[in-house]
Structures are given as C-alpha cells and as structure tokens.
Length: 339
Ligand code: 13P
Image (cartoon, rainbow, N blue to C red):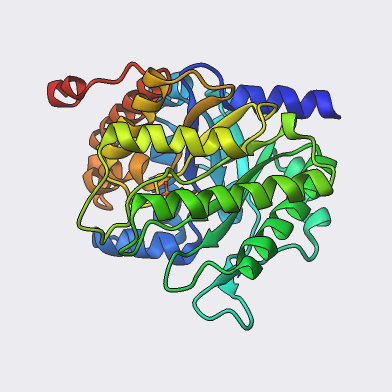
C-alpha cells in the first residue's frame, strides 16, 4: 500500500510538472464565470474544463495531475468520454477535492474550520473507483487582530490529519493544504510566524495519526506580505522567507511541496516559484498547484464562447509552460514578453 502511495506522490512532482487546481465548487466557479459574463450551466462548466484538459501539449508536458470537483469527476466530455479519462489519456492523474468547505469555527470569531470527515471513508472508496489517485483538503487560516487562535490552528491540523489517514487507507495520496490567507495589513514576518506555526501543528498531527509522509504532498501558501501592507516584499525575499519557513517545519521525507497561488498575480506566482528553485537546494521538489494563476488568462480568453476555445487553450498552455519552467528554476521574465 505504501509503495503505491509513494509512486503516486512522486509522479505528482515529476521534473518540470505541477498540478492544475480545477476543483472550484459550483459556487466558486459561478463567481469566476460571472467575472467574464458566462452563464454557469453544467454544460458550460464541462466545456470550459474540457477545453483545459484537451490542451494536450500543456497537459502532457507540464501537468502531473488535475484536482477535480465531484461534479467533474462524474462528468463526460462532449463526445461521451469521461473527463477523468480525457485527463489520464494525457498522462496526468485525476484527483479530487474532498472537503466540504470552511465553516465558521464555534467560539472563534472570524475563524474557520474545514468540514467533510463524515462518511469520508466510503466517499474515498467510490472516488478511487472513479479514477481518483490523489485528493485535496484545504484548511483556511486567517491573519487578523489576535488571530489565528491556537484553537483554529490545532482544530484544522487535526482535521487535515484525519483526512490524510483516511485517504491513504484508500490508496489515495492526500494533498494537505493549510492555507494562510494573504489578505490583510500584516507584514511578511507575521505571515512567516503564522505559516510556521500552522505547519508545525500539521506535522505534529500527521505524526500522531500515523500518516505515511512519503505518500503525501504539501500545498502551502508562500510567505508573502499581507495584500494591504504598504511594503510589499520582492521576489527574492519571498523566495528566501518561504524556503526558510518550510525548512524549519516540513520533514525532508515529504516528496513534494506544490504551492497554491492564493490571489497572487499570474506572473508573481511563477516568479516566486522559479526564484525558490533557482536560489536554493531543497530536500523536496518545489512545484505548483495553482488554480487562479493557471486559469485566469485562459478563462478571460475563453469568455464563455466556443469560438474562443483555441485562444483559451493557447493562454492556458503558455501559463502551464511558464510554471513548468519555474518548477526547475528556469523561468525568465523575458519569456513572458516574448509571448
Ligand atoms: P489558487 O491557486 O487560486 O489559490 O487555488 C488553489 C487551490 O486549489 C486552493 O485550494
């Protein structure tokens, strides 16, 4: 069992490859579609996602896996092929988001706890049969006045570890995602402290719950300045602080760390990742698991119109290629300008 988990986890961070997060819940994809004036119907959601999964160069060369929402894992492409098969035909692995969202944490004003553990063992068995080989669970840690609380950090870490153990029991690699949110006036030092505390709590719980670290992937935020802070750390500082923080808290037995983009611009997300790989030797692979930073340009180019499919695929392929280069530290600003 552990051998299969390790093989899957290593495939997820194969050289120059990363993960496409396309697991927006129906509510979130509605917001994305609203931003381009597209109707959020089941067919439109399928057409948009099928467009991404059929960008075959990008999928075969840059993407190791795709995180799907429940609806997509059960959906067929326009020609009747299951979308999970469209993905696996490119060589990428289908994955599944299994949490049911971040809900208000009782007695902790302004904080969240992620739900979804009830019935998860049975859901994992079904998801495996549907082709999922890895999963994702996202915890939300907010920085603000007096928060995060210990309660929030520990409750979320406990749930992440319970999820991870259940995933591994089903031969599914858990992506553990404790996301420290970028929003707020805090500085980069505060982001560092909260990220470090969240990661220590997470790895304590993963140990306590006997999770096999070699068969996991971490999906963290980068250590950045709060979005409303008047001083924004530059690319090298973000790279340096992020790697320093991870080295303090993440065991070297973890095979790969695939960052979320969290609201960073497309180019910042790429530049930060590339700088980390170019500047530092790390015990783990450092790659991407971007949602917005991989999809924003493609979504805009698509605009909800079938005639724009090729333009949207070109936009997606470009971002996938840039992030693939960043995953080995080989990205350069000039490559964006050239495109
Ligand atoms: P972003 O890259 O848009 O933050 O999304 C990644 C993700 O999957 C969050 O859970």
